[in-house]
Amino acid sequence: MPSDCLLPSSTPVALYEQDALHDLNGGTLRPGGVGLTRELLHFCAFSPGARVLDIGCGPGHSLELMAREFGLRPCGIDPSPAMLAKAGQQAPMAELHRGTASALPWADAAFDGVLCECVLSLTEDMPSSLREIHRILKPQGRLLLTDIYCRQLSPKALLPELKSCISRALPLETITEGLIRAGFSLLLLQDRSELLKQLAGQIIFSYGSLEQFWALFMDNEAAHRTHCALATAPLGYYALVAEKGGPHG
Image 1 (cartoon, rainbow, N blue to C red):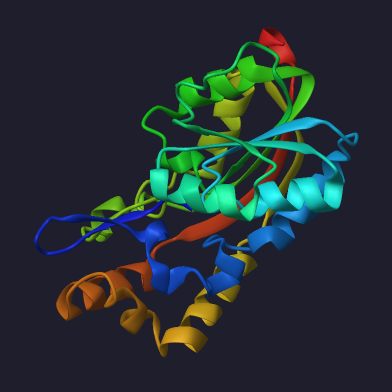
Image 2: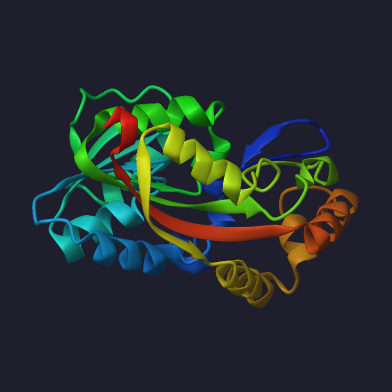
C-alpha cells in the first residue's frame, strides 16, 4: 500500500518500503490483506488464463495469489524499484513494469481485470487514472477497488505528519460518482470498515500501541499528534467491483 510520512527533517520516507512493516497483515499493509483480495476475485470469477493487472502491486502478494490460486496471468505496475524487486521474487511468473495509474503502458482493451488496492486515493488525478483503467480494460472488464474513504470532512488538515491515502481520503459518494463518469457500472459495493479496526489491532499487538508504531517513522511528539488525529478521523474502508460499460464503454 503506497504511503509516505514526513519526518521532522522533511525527509520523505516511503512507509510501505519499511522492513519493520513487512510482517503485518501478511506483508500487504492494507486492511483485509490478501483475504479481501481473494473474496473479490471469487466474486469476479475470471476464467483461467485471464490477464489481470495489479496497479501499485507492492511486494507482489496479490500477483502470487492470482497466479497460484486462480490460474490467472498477473501483471504488476508500481512506481517503486524496491517494491518491483520484491514482487519479482514473490511472483516470478508476473509481468512487471515501473509506472503509475495515470499513464499505463498498455494498449486499449489489454486486460480482463484490474486490481487497485489502497492506491486510487494516492493518485495525483483520480479522474485521469480511472480513464486510463477504463481504456486498458476489455469490454465488460472488471475493476476490483479497495481504499480508505472519508465519512465526513477531509481529515487532511488534522494530519500534518502524513502524506498518505489517509490524509487524501475522499467521500465514498465522490469515488462512486467518479467511477460512473469514467464509464463504469457498479456491481458490488461493501463497507469494510471493520478491517481498519482489525489492522489497528494487529499493529497494537505487534508494537504495543498505535503511538509506538508511528514513533518508528517520526519523533515522539509527531507520533503523538498523528495518533490523536487518527483516533478522531472519520475514516472508513470500502471494497467494490465495477464493470467497464456505460457511455464510454
